[in-house]
Length: 448
Ligand code: FCB
Image 1 (cartoon, rainbow, N blue to C red):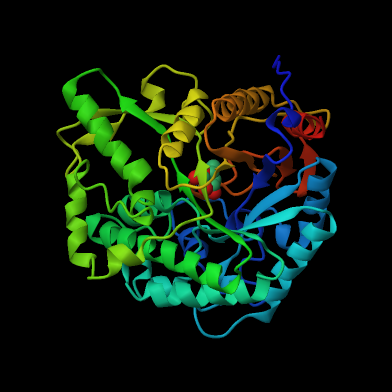
Image 2: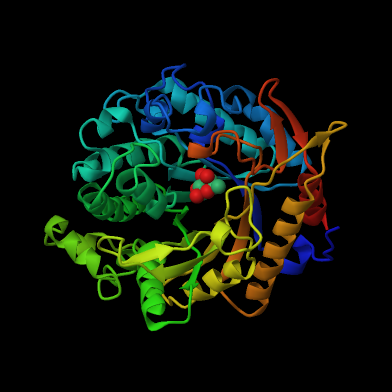
């Protein structure tokens, strides 16, 4: 049985508490109401891309049930709601004609949040690139800078008067790494030849999007988010330590350091020298932006070893399943000190104004029994991580908020509906929502 006496009040009244979601994972209505296809709509239809062949055409049906979910949040004392905007709901072809129904939908969502005193935190891009733009090369085509400018401008003009917290991107390392290098996420591309140009164009769009938002919504706070984990050597050998430094440069530093004006971490990850052909004269200046806040997203830690057989990198993550440690359903190690470590690591960048944890959470096998989901493992996971965040705050580190991933169970990308991360259970047949034990606990934690 989990025990924790900590409550939200111990963090002070200005500390921000919330939940995070993403459009593709919850909305459904995938091609209705004027929405165009995104790379995820196309990728999920391909064979052997998603566990059990699960589809997201309906997902949580949030497009039709957003009000119910916002009321759920209200009943759980959740005051901050992070969600993303589906690019193809706004611009079905990525650029050009605007779908007014899409604009109207997000306006209703935002109005509903505000009516119930819930602050909207909007992510512009949470992985669902328009397929029409992917057909022209997607993130690997430098023209994406113009396309992303157009999307950002439409969103800023449509929602800027109501939305005061914006995040440009969600986890650039994951969508470029999984989508353009490993091919396990949409659009399913592989290899350095796709990955490297995508990385550089993402880094440019990250700053470009932020500058547009700052100009069009001057009184808003502009951030962006990064996936990050504590990374250390598998064995205490020189070669493994070296491999860990390299992996850290790629997984934790690649996207933040150019924004801070530090350039790419080439000396620790020499493979990044291969970015040079894509870098034009003013680029390293253009990719700088002084963000109002940085969102960090942490789920686990990684152990890395030297591997002769991995081309270019010679470094390899040793899976948690091979390390005899406690894991979640995603096979990610449960290691709460990792979140303290990443807050400490990013607090050391003096240029970062404020850090929010914009995602943290866990998938476990949930069982519905007599209409209840008694998810003790998730409860323990959350309490242990929140305790580490508290320790970080008490140590004077630069952390100012914490968002749980996620409100309701949803479509977990390549894992489909198998991995449930929600504070609220969804029966994907009836779409009925049931607050889990962890959700009930969070509601009380926030009240005290
Ligand atoms: C993060 C993603 C989010 C969700 C969680 C489990 O990497 O940002 O959409 O899939 O992992």
